Image (cartoon, rainbow, N blue to C red; front, side, top):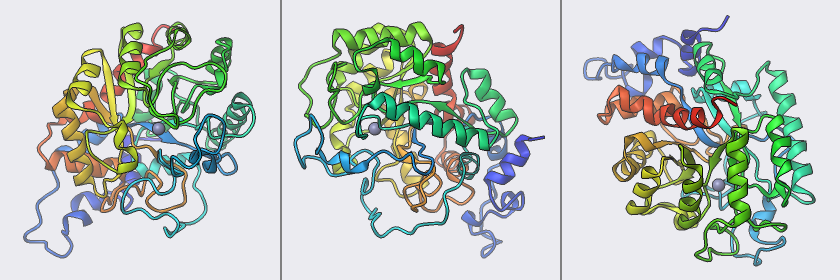
Length: 396
Ligand SMILES: [Zn+2]
């Protein structure tokens, strides 16, 4: 039997003792001056569905070809983007992954999730960073994820009740996503095929052109044109709604996002962006205040990536900046990290320094320290995402 407490202890790594004497407070060396652990921490972690709206989950052998991020393939001007522009090697200042330590053999999905302290992540695969038919590559990757989940006796979350069960049973899981809709290749029927394989979150756009039928304008290798959703893109959105797939408009231009939002007409997500500023490579995808506000007003939940943020304190400041723009009901976590990476700094568990206890517990502790209410932490930590996920999947 699993229990939240077991998970909670596991997530904190050092066990229950860490609650009494957490190393990040320096309690062991400064017992008289260390502040006590916030009494709300355990309760918030017990109640939270900690969710990462954008994660790359590549079991060994299923990694996309990151060399294709440099613009060498069809539709991409050569060399206009470095590899890893979106979360690959080198994304984010202070990270030189060519020198970063390999931390050991890759963990399984269950163990990697446990290390993060999250309840679930949306698992994506860059379908435009493959050679050959994106549909074949996508299905091959789904097969690999199936096997990895089966090895850990996990199944994908298909509805909100599955996420609630994952929390209650301390058995973290994934929501199946994609990064790019290139596998559709002009054939809407393909969406139903991958829905049957568990797809419940559809990020339509990524870095590279769709070589068959464009779904709309995006911020990627061709440069945004100022356009919005195409008629076919609108059809894809409607098909997602019909099937019960959460629409993710990340990487779309602002006009594309707003065009999509009008059709969705219910909560949706923009899974991984940031407030203005941030690492140069990803700056063109950051949101201005008016844009974030408009997305929120249209029902969007905006995930904030960890790129360029080195500590929980810095990351929580990014969350706070986005909350000031979009409101606390419209912000979530969207790390844009690699769950199973063995490179320190690139995996979700190691994305932030000074995060003893695990990624999510450290963020919750930091949010409490920075004055967030428990209620707001539950929203940003995953509650807002759950509202959108439920709206998309309920009744299907
Ligand atoms: Zn991305």
